[in-house]
Amino acid sequence: MRLRYLIGGLGVASAATLLYGMLVEAERLVLEKPVLRLPRWPERLSGFRVGLIADCHLRDRHTVGLTRRAVRAVLGEGPDVVVLAGDLIAYWRPDVPWLVEEALQDLLPVAEDVIAIAGNHEYWGGGGPELMRRILETLGFRFLVNELLWHKGVAWLGIDSANAGRPEPERLFSDLQPGEAAVALWHEPDCADLLPDGAALMLSGHSHGGQFTFPWGWTPMHTRNGEKYVRGFHPEAPTPVYVSRGLGTTGYPSRLGCPPEATVLTLLPA
Ligand SMILES: [Fe+2]
Image (cartoon, rainbow, N blue to C red):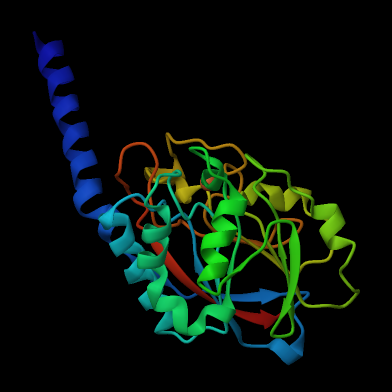
C-alpha cells in the first residue's frame, strides 16, 4: 500500500514539475551577454558584438511570440551581426513561410546583417535547406549552407547540419586566408572537435542546454553531437565554442533549470 502511495506521489510530483516547466521556465527568456576573450580575435575587431538566437522550433503562435521577444531583446543591444544558429522551425508544414516571417519581422530593418544556418530540423517533414533559403533570402537574410561569407571584416563559415545534412568544413576552410578573423557557424556543438584549424570561435545551439537539468548538471535528455559541449562557453575546445541553450523545446514543451536564451556576445582578443 505504501509503495502505491509512493509511486502515486512521484507521478503527481513529476506532472507538477513538467507543468511548472511548461508554464514558467519555458517562458522565462534570459538575455545572456557574455564577453569572450579569444586568442585568434584581432585587435581591430575588439568589441565586435554578435547576437545569437538558436533553436526557435517555430510551429505555432507561442513559439513565434517567444522568438519575437528574443529578437527584440537582442536588437535592443545593437549587435553588429545577428546569427540564427539552426532549427528555426520544428518541422516543415504549409505555414512555415508565415511562421518565419512573423517571428523574424523585427529583423527586417537590419536584414543584411542577419546570417542563418541550417539545423537538423530544417530537414524534417519533407522540406530542406533550399526551401528555407528561398524563404530567408526573400526576407533579405543570408543563409549559409557550406558557404563562406565575408561581412563586416569577418569570415563567416556556415556549415551544414552534421546530423541531417552534408557538412563540408574542409572545403570551406580551404578558402580561408591565414590571419583572417573567422567565425564558424555549425548547429551541432560537439562538431567543434571536427572543425579544421583556423576559426577564432564556433557558434552553436542544438543541445537546448539539456532542456531539463538537475543538480550537478545531470540531464535525462541526450542528443547526438550535443552532449560534450552542452551550454555556454567552452574555451577548452580545439576551437572555442559558444553553445546557446536556444529558445524552443523538443519532446514535452517544458524546461527545467534551463531557461530559454537570447545572447549578445562581445568578442575581445585574448
Ligand atoms: Fe538541432
